[in-house]
Length: 417
Image 1 (cartoon, rainbow, N blue to C red):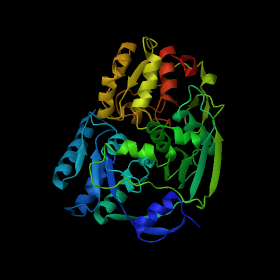
Image 2 (image 1 turned 90 degrees about the horizontal axis):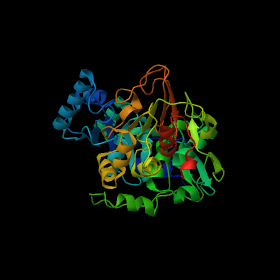
Image 3 (image 1 turned 120 degrees about the vertical axis):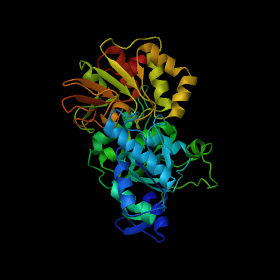
Image 4 (image 1 turned 90 degrees about the vertical axis):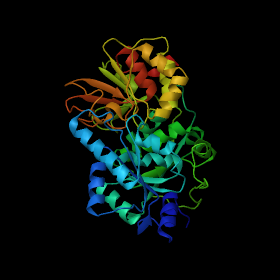
């Protein structure tokens, strides 16, 4: 019997053949922490007396950047001091979100095994890496040992087909899939996305798909590793490592195969307070919003900004709406400036904040008041996610968020296309 992508990568890193359900100790290629998780990593590494790490490691200051408080500033200083001590790379304020700046660095290649002290580390499956989130102590152990233990996950195969309707984007597709599979329907599974819709999707859309694998409980997942992947990586890879294609064997064994036809799909919105509580945007047209947020590791890339700018051009956001935009990285911010996208956003009445996580995690840059409603391109809408458990968060595509910012109500964006 052939192997799935997860079985292939873990087998390679264990140095022996593995199948789903097996346990193994595997070499880790890359690890990282962010400012919400790195403080514990630093403490554990110092407790172990390590002077040299056995796994390539970096830290990213993105969740609260720039710092909104004295306590956060102490954490940031701790990270800066540690990076100097241990000679680890640090992406400081303004660099962007970990799940964008690390792929942009060219450090992650197809077939790599990556651990991140952040639950959305599964994003790098768009680059063909088996990447998964772990706790800070587990990550520190990987830094000390250069490896960690893994249980090889079962794999779900998701085939996406049909003609994608106008006004439908990767975020709509993944929200619909999560609705059908449910928030725990892929718990501890690897997920392989395939089919003509995924094949034709650009890399920005694939990052969106992989980013939200954890929102259905997934451990890791992959979109196709193909010429688009290579074209995205090639100008970024500085090392001499070769970019290699990787795919599942034709006779690989899957726990379950799902097939979705998106030909009739309408713009989707996840309603409070769970990501799988999804409905059509048009059914929420009477829902008045207070804040719109375009950003996060899910949807703050160039393709996302282009779509939003197309809708916003020569228009103004509703006067009662706070429209906050956070680029995923400095590279994306600069490209948006070059293309005139930022100019469109500012003239429409939006506020641009520093590249980073922005309001998503609820520590600064747009905390909601009691009873307020936000529509966001983020990946989570749990109670308190944007800083206030008495507020309400709806999740949607950049197109739906931009359209809603204009009207002041949750709006089906198809009329703008």
